[in-house]
Image 1: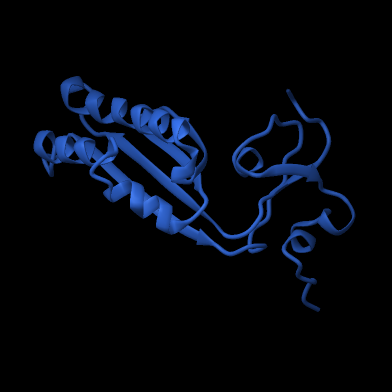
Image 2: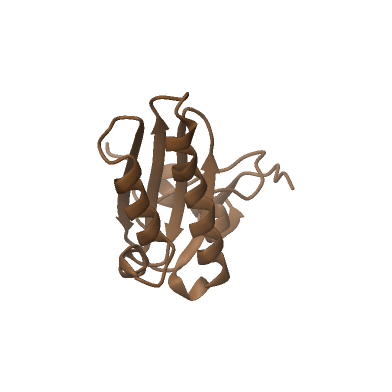
Length: 158
């Protein structure tokens, strides 16, 4: 559903934004990049079946560079999943290192950001629930939430 009004996202407490992706450097080597691309949906399925692991929401975009944005409840939960011997992640990471390693066919990357409660802002207009708005909740971006500075609780510098 498209929300025509101006909205902002809210989420209780601290949270983590995790950006992860891969870059297909040699597209003709499908046998190298396809297993890497296919691993992430398996991990997300596992995490959605077990919300107690801490994943709040994830969205993915496909192109030569695949990118996924994930929202996590805490850094501890993200790290626990990444290192869990019972989770899908470690076998996928091992398979990547054995099949691709540093041969240059497939690039992988991630960036992790710990976000303090209230230290973020967002706005959505003519959008369905998206990103942080799906990880948390949406509310009208009016009054004390009208501008980015308002949403951050800052006043403009004179």
